[in-house]
Length: 147
Image (cartoon, rainbow, N blue to C red; front, side, top):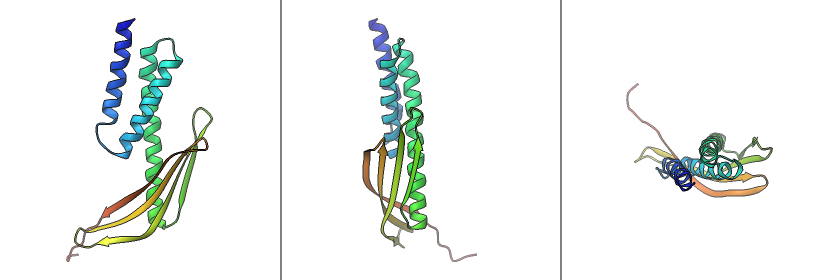
C-alpha cells in the first residue's frame, strides 16, 4: 500500500514538473488542469494511481484548451479593437468563459520594431471569476527598404 502511494505521488510530481517547467500562462493553465484532474482522479477511483494518471492527462488537455481559447480571444480583440468573449460547455455540464478587452491604443516602438497593446483578460468558470489580469501583448514587425 505504501509503495502505491509513493508511486501516485511520483506520477503527480512528474506531471506537475512537465507542466510548470516554463513560466508562461500556457504552462500555468496546464499545471492547474493537471493538478485538479489528478486530484479528482485519485479521489474518485478505486485504483488511485490509475486515477491520478488518467485524471492528470485529461486535466492537462482541458488546461491547454482554455489557454488556446484565451489566445484566440486576445488576438481577435487586438485585431478588431473591440471586446471579445468566448464561452464553451465543459464535459461535466458546466461552462467556461474568456473575455478579452483591448485597453487604449497600440503603442509602436520603431527602435525595437514592435507594436504593443494592453489587454484586460477575465476567465470565468461556472459563474465564478478565476482569473482577472492585464497583459501587454507585443508583436514584432519587419521593415526593409527593398521590394
